[in-house]
Amino acid sequence: MIELNKVSKSYGPKHQKHTVLDRVSFTFESNGTYGLVGPSGSGKTTFLNILSGLDSFDNGSILVNGTEIANLGQDELSKLRRDYFSFAYQFHYLLENLTVYENCLASDLSASESDITNILENLGIGELTHKFPSQISGGERQRASLARALTKKPKILLLDEPTGNLDENNSAVVQELLLNYTKQNDCLMIYVTHDLPFAERADKILRIENKSLSF
Ligand SMILES: Nc1ncnc2c1ncn2[C@@H]1O[C@H](COP(=O)(O)OP(=O)(O)OP(=O)(O)O)[C@@H](O)[C@H]1O
Ligand SMILES: [Mg+2]
Image (cartoon, rainbow, N blue to C red; front, side, top):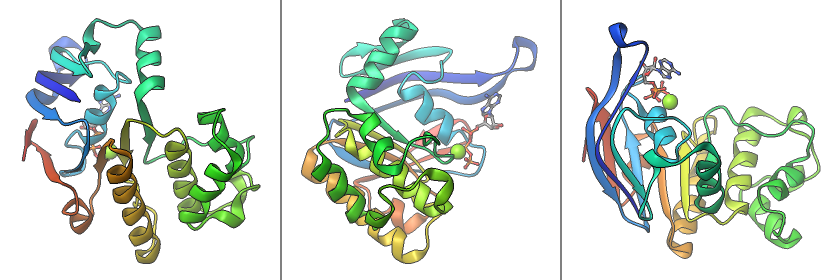
């Protein structure tokens, strides 16, 4: 569960502050899917980043499974991210010197070969298992980074435009997989998307606009 209470976030020095989020309060249940929409530049990526402590916030409180993250140091935040979170971001951060398979394994060294192979096959990239990121397309890299995120079997999945680079068919496959995965594994998934029909498949749609979160 993630509980936000009056969370504010701004960028820039004091005299030129650019406020992105202004006293946002919301509770994400431990299991469920949340589609996050809003105009470009409204703060969606920022929002995901502060939920996991990747980015700091100015005021308010964020409890992740009961732990106040505002009070945690970098090491504790890293541990919290390792224990609970998986990410797949707009600009996928695959490790270039590892194959697709090794990238997945790196997220969870205890994952079995068959688990990883299954995930890759379900995402339609089974034949790319032993390719390096530089040898595959942008949409394939996006699916590889989703595979890596799922390999970890996270309790909380944060996805930034997971279908952004995909054609209609692959987007449908990925949507189905992610929504099924979340239901079957009782986890929490928050995904940013500009694709309204995809957002509407979530249990709840959230919109960030004018520094506020509405639902
Ligand atoms: N590190 C940063 N330093 C300063 N300003 C930033 C930083 N990161 C984001 N911003 C600003 O904060 C605002 C929100 O950015 P953010 O990336 O969260 O938007 P977004 O909703 O994810 O947009 P998009 O849909 O285009 O990805 C923007 O005005 C952006 O310019
Ligand atoms: Mg963004």
